[in-house]
Length: 404
Image (tube, rainbow, N blue to C red; front, side):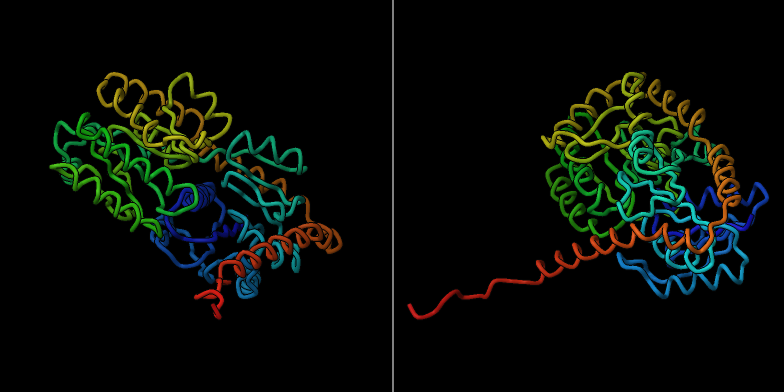
C-alpha cells in the first residue's frame, strides 16, 4: 500500500507524534508511507524514520483550496492508494479534495475528546478511547478503536538517571515532577497553571521541583506565574524548559509525571507514577483502583471545577514521601503500556483497517452523498465562527452620550 498521512500541524503534540510513529511502523511492515502537513518542528522525526515529507499550507478552520490542490497533485504523482487524516481539519480537505474528485479512500482518526458533527459519518473513523467509541458507534456505521500507542523500546526505564538530573540542575534530595505538554489554552493551560500553584503551595514542605516541558501561546502566562512562585522561595521550584524535540530525558529524570493522553502513556512507559491531568480541576493518581476508569474513558477527564491546585497538592505530598509507592505505581504503568499500548500492535491493526477500506471503492454518486450532510453541518459551524468573530470585533463607542 502507498499511504498518505495528513496532519493539521507539525508542532510537537500527541496526535501528530502518534501519526508519524505509526506511519514509520507501516513502512517497517513493507508499505510506502508519506507525511503531508505544514512545515514544523516534527520534520526531523519524519526524516529519522525515512519517510518522505510533503509540505502543505498552514491549516486553519476553513477548507483550503490550495491544500486540496496539493493533495490532488500528491495523490497523482505518488500514486497514493489511501489517505489517513488525523483530526478534522485535514480530514475535510482530503474529503472535498481527492476523495470527492478521484475516489481515493479516506480514513479519519480523531484523538480529541469529541468528534465534530461535520466529520463525514460515512468515512471509517478511528478513535483513541472506549468511551468515544461507544458514542460514535451510535452515530456511525464504521468506527474502530486504536488506543494511542507508545514505542516501548525507545521509551523505557533508565537504570541510572543521575547524569540526566545533574544536567537539569536537580539536587539529589529533590522530588522531580514533570509535565510534557504543548502550552496552549485548549486542554492544557488550566492544569499547568494549577500545577505551578500546587508546587508553589507545598513545594518547600515536600522539596518538590516542577519542570514544564513544551512551548506555545500560553507560555508567557505560565512563566509569569512560575516567576511569582520562584520569587517566594529561596531556590527555584518551577522551571519551564521550553520545547524539547525529544523529551525522553525529561521523563527519565522524573519522580512523578503529570499528563494526559499520549504524554501520560509515555510517562508510564518510563515506569513513573502518573497523575492524570484533565480539565475543570481534575487530577487523579493512577492506581490499581483507578486504572479501569482510565482504560474505559481515556487518559483525561473533567472534574468539578473546584480547587485544582489543592487537589493536586494533596496527591503530590504523600506520593513524594513514599518512594516504595512511587516504584510500585511506576511498575503498574509500565506493565499496562507494554501489554496494551504497543506501537507494533497498533500498526498491524491499522493495516487491517486500510485493507478493508481499499476493498470498497465508492462510485461518484456515493461520494457526493457521503458529503451532503457534512456540507450542511460544516456551513453551520463556519457561520457560528463568523458570528463569534463579529462579536469580538464589535466594541461599544467610547465616551457615552453627550449633551448633559
